[in-house]
Image (cartoon, rainbow, N blue to C red):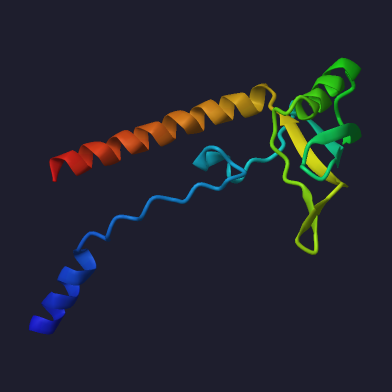
Length: 136
C-alpha cells in the first residue's frame, strides 16, 4: 500500500522547472526560431564577394520575389554599408577572399502581426514565471 501511495505522490509532484532556452545566434528572439516565409514577405538571396577580412566588396541579388529595383538595391546596400557582420571565408585555417550567400527577409503584414502576437505571449509567459518565482 505504501508503495502505491509513494508512486502516486511522485507522479503528482510538479516537474522541475525547465532551464532557460539557449539563444540561437541567428535568431534574436526565441519565437523566431521557426520563422517561415509567409504571404506578403519579401525575400532575396544575395551573393557577397568578401575580402580576406570579411568586408563586403560586391553584392548581387541571386534570386528574389522583390520586383522593386530600389528596394533590392537597399537590401544589398545594407551589406555593403556594414550593417551585417560577415565572417571571412576560411581555407585551411587562413582567411581568404571568397563569395558567400545570405538570405534576407523583409516581413510583410502577416509576419508582423504574428510576430507581435508571439512577442506578447512570450512576455506574458515571462511575467508569469517571475510572479510565480516571487511567491516561492
